[in-house]
Image (cartoon, rainbow, N blue to C red; front, side, top):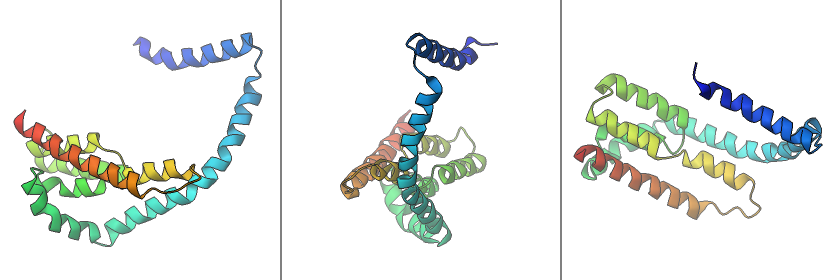
Length: 170
């Protein structure tokens, strides 16, 4: 058995020992921390719910498919295989949805194909921008997410283009 499995229990034991030496009431401190987290969770919930609903509507409405077909030629021009355009569109909205699309690509084209390599890079090189924005801006008093979200989306797209370029030349 590897020593790695002992790291997390060792960290917990170290925290408890350090707290005991410093005479910190661990359970009370934990309860205080949870008490502070409840308002954050309550303020975060509407944003996360909205993102989950919007991503489901995006897929169920057919807008995702229509956008995929419309943007495939532009993606191909930029060096992005049209077969992964669905993944490129879903990734900013849904991590689990993009994982499902990645799995479909692997089963259809094979895990070692150029398309699967590009899809892997797309999946790994970006974040679910709208979810992360909801989490970040839920705790902010001044909510002006438009510019940061646009910057994050453009950055994700540039990462997709360069990732596919690297997959092509390597």
